[in-house]
Image (cartoon, rainbow, N blue to C red; front, side, top):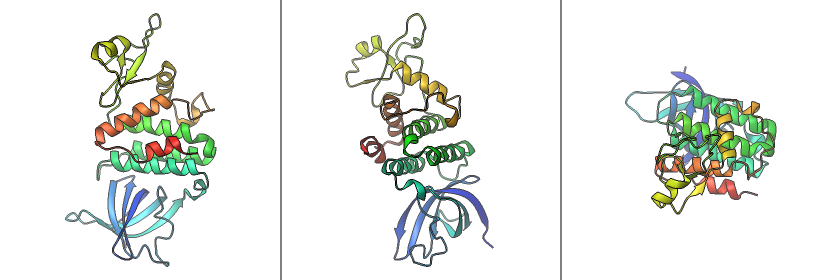
Length: 257
């Protein structure tokens, strides 16, 4: 019998030797792990289609304290994302979820909330199909940054501390690469933040709602690519700043047809 069986989501795989795979997978109870799936690339592999990216599985594996890689025994497929592959943009969204998870999740640290976040956006994509891509990507990005502890206040200027959403005197908000939060128009001029973008009041309002509601209960349902595009750019820059690398899938997603 295997030493452990965990509910998991497969993040990525890459080849090892002639027939094996190294698998990065995110378990509900043990966090992100990496393991070797022997003979996984052969036609009669015991893993079947269970190692496709973001497959929801029950992974059986042996874990030793002295080794970084676990030994994968088999996996039982719970839910496949195969039905989303026919929609190119949804497929790129899956790649984005997997890449962000791979970069943000620390090794061997359980995160029940992040696990449930991934399940929620995957279920939303299955239900809404290609129409739900932008809502799912934006919701996931916001909560991924929040759960990682990197989401700044979206209603306070990082420079002077003024409130950006004051009803009587609303302030425009701006962000730039490498800056942890938002700044008002006055601070933008004072600090000389020329290469910056505006985060609209509408997008900040959407972010506030997303932080308080499940993805299926958001008031806005007719999302297009332009909806909260400035918020997605801001969140991607926050992720890239903290992981110190550019995301490969983010520009692919925004240019996908």
